[in-house]
Image (cartoon, rainbow, N blue to C red; front, side):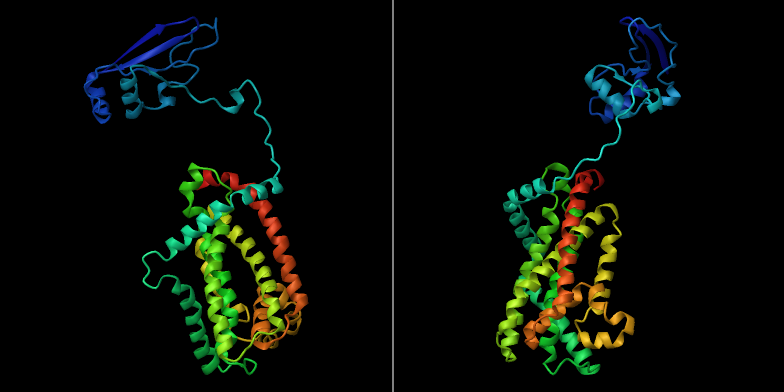
Length: 375
């Protein structure tokens, strides 16, 4: 049973109360854990109007009961707990407002300020890197050895399939070091992107509750994958010495190749981590794209063999279409064959990586303020 009464308070105020019967209130009160209270749950149908305004009929202006909808049990319980009614007002549309909303503004991205903030958070970055490494190998019997086993197993498979069965020419050098010299940097590239794809999504509780530079999360994935790369590189240098490949002048190009690779990895990791926030399909498409790149890049076969198989029109542009080609081939040249990298395609990859990183960082800082609202 419901009784309705209309009361008049301050000037220009008309309120209509609907007092629910005790039987209707008891269910909500019991759910609120306050069944002992016997305070009437009130519904405010009218809101205070401007001073001196005439009283309007109940249900007019701010919406009738049908427009406002039924009163929720949570609101009934809250009214009973606070001993006061809660206003219910129909939301106003834009046309009903007395003022125009401000125009949409585009805020400038202060790159230098963001970089200073990022550098000031370097200790937090190292904390995230340490956390990623601990979580990655937590409760793993082999621990960090998995960073070595993955490229080693690929080397064994490539040696059997491409070196023994397919008998792909590999320049007269042992096939294990031929393939492993390119698999180690490839593992760094693939691992950083694979871990960085979910870097923002998996850290959603931190992003929602506290502020820190959002680029810390994908970059921490890159640095933690760099730890795996360092371990694998030690195994690579040991294999090179075991096969009689002593250090030469060309080994001085190794840090330069690593720098170009790092620029490319950081830019791509920030792109996929930010895109995954809005499009969750990215985390399912990333492994497939990496698998395609593994065979589209001269890792298991020499670059000369790939160029010979391509149409004549694509042979000259192939190293420029895939920036990984001159980088991975450069690692193999300087470490295994004792030759310098192909500088022109490598310079092209360096330009793509540097410009891509600058543009990606600007774009990332422009959209990272909305991450907490989306995830």
